[in-house]
Length: 333
Image 1 (cartoon, rainbow, N blue to C red):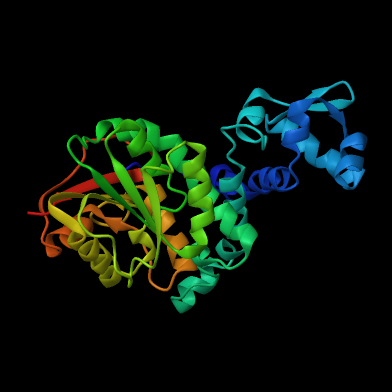
Image 2 (image 1 turned 90 degrees about the vertical axis):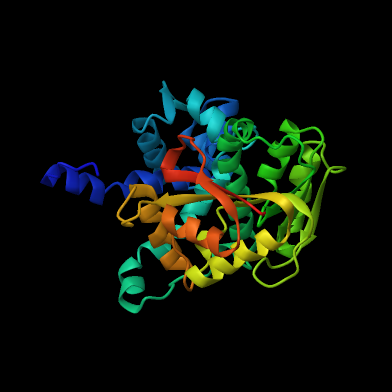
């Protein structure tokens, strides 16, 4: 495992790094980047149009310039090319939903010591969040992330000859969409909570796939799953469940497969000793903060779940993916 050469300067830099994080979150939450992508504004004009305090806004704009997200032009401010692409709401590559989701997680992370002391969550479960703004940020944030990776990953997964895909806990349906775009004969079913339906149907319609991708509402831990699928795709759903419940979800998904069907599990995968890579290890803490028993899982743990579900030919796909993401495949005999 890579060793860090820590020193006081680096430790203090890490300790204070949330300052820049919070400045970015504020810029997105106030939607500063959209008007500044359209044209330059003075701090006064922007403050007036958005109903903000001019002095405070000019301080935030200055910090965003220092961070390289805005440019200063005489007495006006404008978005950089990167900000126009990733932070303006009208951009197809907008990442603001995921950034707002991160923003909503901040209060929980500030109470990590409490969660460790009591071994229980200190915030509501985000995927079941009743507040519409938080739920939208979570679901469309998942869309943001999946759109960055799905078009690159899907071509490496061979679904030739398979007709029906089950996207379990599929959220807005990004993966189902990308699998169908890459496989013209494939149909798909997104199975997720009823509150997810409007987001999924909107996204599916945006890609013109309403005739090939259906939505079925339900709880994948307890409700009956669509049967006879050739492929079941479980992307980032197991980490929200404790070990035995996660194993039960794998078993239920395996039982929904037709004979010879393939189960694909995508997760932030820990090393066998659970001490790395860094992102899955930190993500496991995120699950501690917001779920009763969720956690990141190691490759041996995922393989064991699939073996207990009766799957064979189990193995991790040879893909180099960011943040410790991995895909483990198994087949129903």
